[in-house]
Amino acid sequence: MINRRLFLKSSGLALVAGGLLPNVFVRMAKAGTPAGKRVLVAIFQRGAVDGLNVVVPYAEKVYYDARPSIAVPRPGSGEGAALDLDGFFGLHPSLAPVLPYFKDGSAAFVHAVGSPDSTRSHFDAQDFMESGTPGVKSTTDGFLSRAVAEKKSDKPSPLRAVALSPALPRILAGSAGAVAMSNISQFGIRAGESSAVLSESFESMYGEAVAGTLGGTAKESFDAVRILKSADPDKIAPENGAEYPKGPFGNALKQIAQLIKANVGLEVAFTDVGGWDTHAGEGGAQGQLSNRLRDYGQSIAAFAKDLGSRMADVTLVTMSEFGRTVRENGNRGTDHGHANFMLLLGGGVKGGKVYGKWPGLDSSHLYENRDLGVTTDFRDVFAEILAKRIGIGNLKPVFPGYDCDERKRLGLIA
Picture (cartoon, one colour):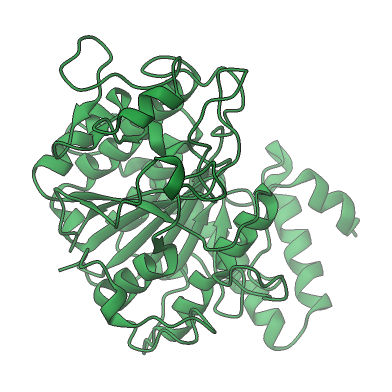
């Protein structure tokens, strides 16, 4: 009998969603779910991206006064200039691949948006945003898990909620169940020539240890591994000439697109991308932030191009735990701030606009005399998407203790 601990250490099997992996690809062998199912794709920019250098308030002189070495030049000022959005805001030039979607009305930005909690801790801020309960540390599940649970379905797919990540993220943790995987083409038992023997032995051992209902679920887990191997999702190639950057983020979005095109019943997908904590050497039009944004923008544009007309059923939204200080620091970077930006792209988005009440950057309007203030709660953005695109009628269980009054919504979604 194989030692269980040794097996887990040497294999690539991840058991998630309450300790057991749901039946993932068994139903891919059947007819699958009909095309046209709406999908929410949420992206977390971990590390607190500098929203003021992403969606640039170039019409404010204070912006340039506060950032003498890292400000993005005004549109029309030469190489590296911001790309004009609406006469007041401009887009960082590294996000040029995203600009056409803004211009054709399928992408929008929200500025001065974020969590109302005042923490400047990455860990706490991410936890509060993923739980959907800012300031409350006792929440046990994530708000997207609660949203999935609230969305009633006669025959829910085991792939209705998927995270492209090594472990199940906080935002999808909960009773609804979700699948986490780093790579759909390597999902399963990986032990070289011994893979088949190890799989059979561990399947037998695991099934005996959790006999009954859980044993049946365990069996389905191994069925899923076998079917995934035969399905070979790598054959679902990018379409419409889309080319994803060869990095973790581009690969994650490529795989989410594969799942969408496979019609396996996906409703909520999540992934994250780090590297945004720019305390030193942030740069303006060029530099550390610019390099991260280039990969970010190219990946998102490739995702939209790959899906083509399918984007009518897909709404992509980005988030980050908080923004950065208005003033650059002595290391030509920025420290932890407050409000930030969000990007929305795809189905239902009333694009071509920067939404949100702009509080201004002069000292009388700054939060704690240093940061852009939050004028839109991130929960209002998600509430509008979940209500209008995913069809969740009752948002109280999704955001407990928060008033999701429709009158507070920005009108982002048609």
